[in-house]
Image 1 (cartoon, rainbow, N blue to C red):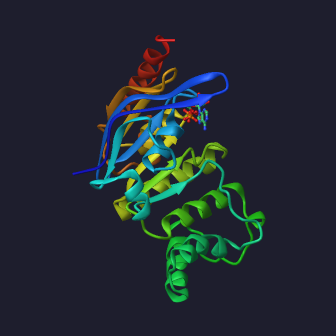
Image 2: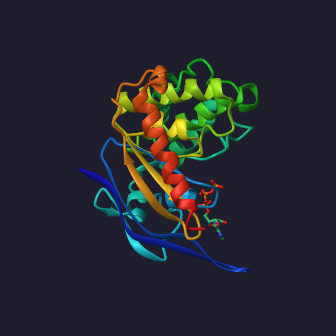
Length: 257
Ligand SMILES: Nc1ncnc2c1ncn2[C@@H]1O[C@H](COP(=O)(O)OP(=O)(O)OP(=O)(O)O)[C@@H](O)[C@H]1O
């Protein structure tokens, strides 16, 4: 069953230096429960595409369907949780207070909010940190708090824009494993932007390779790895083969420049 369907999506930004073709003729189907990574060089339209799915940008041509609705209708139906590159937590609110904010805006009752906050803090292994302020937490913990905030209203689709890009490799490994666990537990559909080939291969059921000027999809790789993935899977021949395929896709895209 398809959850996200992009057909002929193009987006051109008009800038002082002329038009920027951030996306050109992007076609993509994402099925329920898939983990889809977007990878490609800077400026190939990864963030723009994720934002277009979430109706934070409007395509200049083509259409995006989400659960049979338009992207904008889906946004109003709260179909998405969105995790930005930087945690973006309000420093004057505690971690619980930050997670609570969208729930307050959406009108959840105080009791319901408390229940949801406890549940998502547990999911990202931050139980006991709800009363702390963001600056009292490490970068990795802040990023987990921002994931908790995106999970709190329990949307079926989670869109994550390079959430672990600023973290060191050990923390990133831990969070990658935790994210896979959460995905297995919740069955959510995940769209994930990354610059890292190993991260894309480790996490995804489908890897979308993109290329710039104009931003477009050059290759879609269906992963043959099992859904259960210990970190050691990264040393297997199958993992290395898929990583090579991604690298080839990236190289292919560059040859158009
Ligand atoms: N609001 C905007 N106005 C004008 N140009 C924009 C805007 N947003 C993005 N762009 C341009 O569109 C292109 C695609 O940008 P986008 O941020 O989607 O790329 P990206 O693949 O996510 O890059 P990165 O990996 O560096 O985050 C770039 O050339 C960028 O400069």
